[in-house]
Amino acid sequence: MRVREGNVQDWPFIYTLGKKGMLDSISPWRKQPIEETIRYREGFLTGFWTWIQKTGSVVFIVEAVKENGKPCSEEEKTQPIGYLVLHPTSQEELTGLTQGWIMDLGVVPKWRGKGAGQVLLKAAEEYCRAHGVFYLGLAVSSHNVRALKLYEKFGFAEERKLLVKLID
Image (cartoon, rainbow, N blue to C red; front, side, top):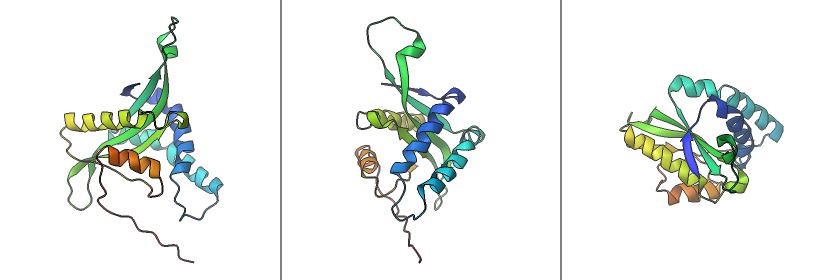
């Protein structure tokens, strides 16, 4: 696996995976037909690349390197298997301290659990370190146990809790 900075040519991959990947993050508390949720996510993603550019955010793409021994073009040697969107100049809401904020992270399902997420997190951490950003944050659904385990293994710790109540 290798990681690189993404660009607008990666957008179709990010859009497609971002739409599929959100299904793992939907809270069971949210009572809404899945079709409406997907429509909302599509609308969000439609403006996401513009937001990335306007805010100076950085995209990292992790690629699987094909090693079949046959000569091939550079494009054929790799395939994207995940992405991470880092907003490196977010401000923490209570202290105002600058922090990196992971806006979105997605890994192709068949590549989950094989280190792609760790490669992306390491790239975000190294970027922050190189740019004098000393905190890195993210939000994750509490029921997304697989993601929680990855983040905890990587050294993230719970700082706050987001509480929700369904009012009927």
